[in-house]
Length: 288
Ligand code: PXG
Image (cartoon, rainbow, N blue to C red):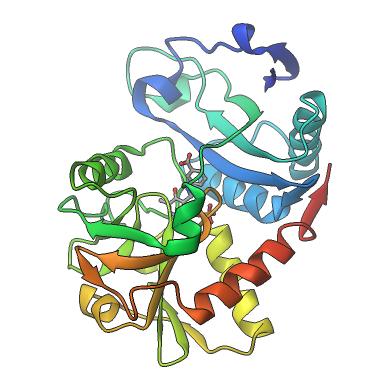
């Protein structure tokens, strides 16, 4: 496997960063998780824009322009002869001292990995996921805005560990006021009386690229969609529930905390949305 690392394509064995890199020492950096489908990098420009916003939010200078980053991302796929892949773009603060001071880090480090991703088993796309609500709360946006896709994922990782302890693959995380924020690596949607509803980013959700695709799909399918403050009650009384993410794509949820949602089977609107999503991933974005 060839990895892009700071201007060069290197073998996996040589793709190494320093133990003094603040990305490692402090989680000081940003990243993107992007998918390549049949030679098409899905919504690459939106991912690069979010990466730029994440970097700007932590005052991290972008090492490359949008155009250069786009080319490097495509070239990483080509070098590995991939047509379907998961692409990870990472920018770290770079090498510095043993001290927080980011201004003492000489220059940011950029690497791009294009590889496979372990998806949810196929049966869950057909039968739906059973998820849980975990005790760990989503981080308060005043402490660290969850809209920044930073290398600090411990909040999500604690949620993921708890999900597994409860026998689930994914979990709803509430914010500190008890409203639903998102899942550990996915955004959450419900369908109620034909309307699609999702929490606003201000409740502690990442502005997911898949999430924003759902808004476009709803428009195409002429389905009403809106953001709203949501509690678990809204899931309990919903007709359908689904999660979205670059890894998960669109996956139905049929149980929350052991309670059946709707009919207990993936719903018709979820399936319509999923079908439209699968068409879009092949055409929206950049050809490599
Ligand atoms: N919330 C969080 C906290 C995420 O990390 C999403 C929502 C969905 O956003 P997108 O833009 O992907 O629709 C994410 C994305 C992984 C992996 O390594 C994680 C994500 C995406 C791809 C792979 O498990 N998280």
